[in-house]
Amino acid sequence: MLILASNDDGYFSPGLEALVRAISTLADVVVIAPDTNRSGASNSLTLDRPLSLKRASNGFYFLNGTPTDCVHIALTGFLERKPDLIVSGINDGQNMGDDTLYSGTVAAAMEGFLFGVPAMAFSLADKGYGEVEAAAEMARRLVMHFLENRYSQPTLLNVNIPNLPLSLQQGFRTTRLGKRHPSEAVQPGLNPFGEPIYWIGPAGKVQDAGEGTDFHAVEHGHVSVTPLRSDLTHRDQIAGLDEWLAPVHSR
Ligand code: MN
Image (cartoon, rainbow, N blue to C red; front, side):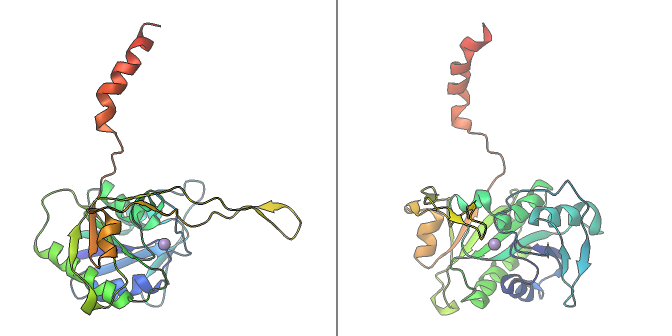
């Protein structure tokens, strides 16, 4: 068994280290992660310059690129065989609801999914790596379950783990993504030269955290597991849009 691990917080992240340590008893694990914190990188590829892969003293490889670059390069040139699973994380902070669109953690997993490799993105619900060892153990249980009982569908799982010790973890829950309000407005500041500067702030407050959502599950101590797909087509709108477009044909 071969597992490829990546993240968006950088190859030095305690979350990545804890995850790799936890799953290394289950399979061979190769790590390729960004050389800096690339949180918020989403599904970006670096196309305007070459990329360099280097090996750290602990065996982790690091790349001067995005999380998506890491997985792309691993699958298109670096790894000699296709991995059985790709894991990403454990992220420093939650990736729930709309966060998933911006997340580099989810993007690394999604890149594997696009290449037909099952993938899981892991995030610890609170920042600061408080209960990262408990989170790594929960991740290990899910990975072990996957390796022993393959899921029949193409697999892209977004996993958010409550920041709780093992004794308080309430087990796994299948969820849908919740929804956030847009981010709060951030007042521009001034740089040392008196010019205005902008710094994008944190995600907005939760809007839909109802039963069945990732937010609700984590709030109640469950590990939230959301099945994702990459096709953004809004299927319910196909017929309505087709009708709306019809008059344009005759012009
Ligand atoms: Mn991150």
